[in-house]
Length: 95
Image (cartoon, rainbow, N blue to C red; front, top):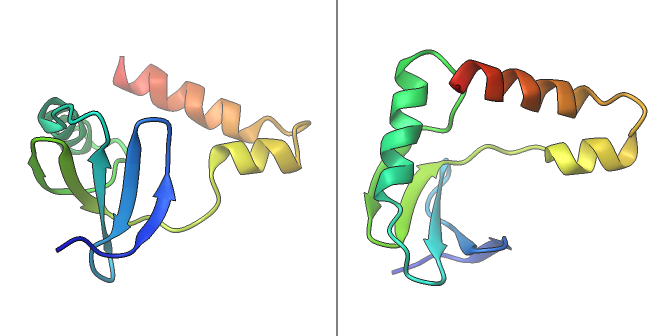
């Protein structure tokens, strides 16, 4: 059974899946298994990434992270560009 819908993105719906977990379901039915492998690889190399608990078909269950989004931060204080620097650092670390 899927929990309460708590968010929607471009491709996925996000559902409550317990106190520290969310289930993200791809609406087009696209598999999330490669994404899960990538996230596990990133975390194994010490980079920040939500923990992956399960991935089957269009569903991936990951650690719930609460807080504002990078978009929210840049919208409220665009002159700081802190979120852009953080994103650039993460991309540099992964590539």
